[in-house]
Image (cartoon, rainbow, N blue to C red; front, side, top):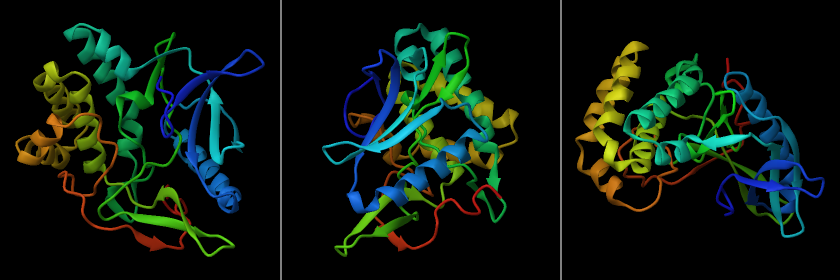
Length: 260
């Protein structure tokens, strides 16, 4: 796995055991509140998806928060898709869809367009262990723009520190990004991946989402996104790659009421 800030990294500690670690820079004054948010998010995600055991949240000497989980003995969905033949790659993609289905189907009571459990839809955020179980390993709340509400913590110095936690993540936006990032993983399988996604949506009664993705893939913005290097990790409420609205400040606890 990549060893960059903001992505999941597999490391071996002094005790000789492997762990999954993700780092993000954070002001020390916000550490306690941010840690609580992360633990709340971990409990929320683990209620619907298989996740590795949380081992600790700490701030290192360089000012980065480190979230550490028990390592998964296996490879990411992205790695498996990249290294597999065409038929196997599509089977792995379907395996990811089935694993994420509980999160996609569980909607907020107040708005059926919104996921009760927000996730970051990227093939590199799912790992398959030796037994074939798919685990969601990126246990930071997803960054969402365009229509999202970002939560800030006030510090003693009067600064506002974003917690990277959001109240509303729309199912259509998540599915769009999952499709886009999967196609970027295997561009040669664009048609097959889209067909498998549509099959999955139809089998689960997600007809409005299927219709929406049909419009997305024919848009100029979607095709432009495919030509850009790197993966799109941002999630929008309307899909469509234009992301121009600013973050809006909120004092609300970002996870209260989501799972209801």
